[in-house]
Length: 183
Image (tube, rainbow, N blue to C red; front, side, top):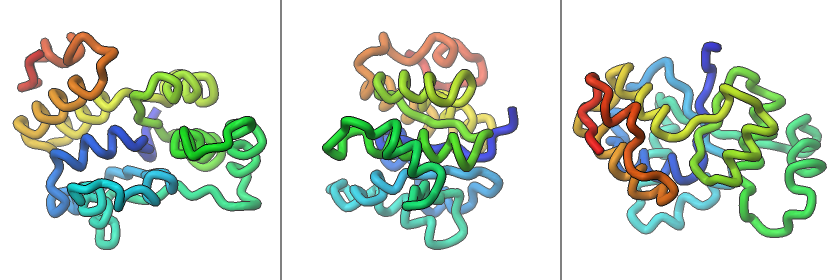
């Protein structure tokens, strides 16, 4: 399946913001990275300003776009009539927006997340091949030459450190001859 867009959950977006240079990201032609509206509303809560700076690149030519679910949109029925049923707080809203939007607007998109509940929900709703761990996106960025080897290594290290459910950088990455990252 050719991927039309990569929809980033909050944590993968934050990990990318820690490492990626916003000016260089603007040149990532041909790559479409989408951020859920709930995540965008929280950008200013990042004290470092790196998330706002990275997403701010979207105001110019950039790979970033936004996942918007509006009243009357088919995704709204899925979001509020199915996925959000029983949820009262903002928790998981970005994940649910991403899944509902992916189901109705981009059947060839991939949702990038690492929160276990979000992963399981997305797998159940979107199916096999439509959900990825951030490591898969980092591999793509490396293979396309969009991140330098040092940036790839930094992304892998920070992702492994942030995901305490993993024993470290996955074997498939740490033992890939093309990768500079080592677990």
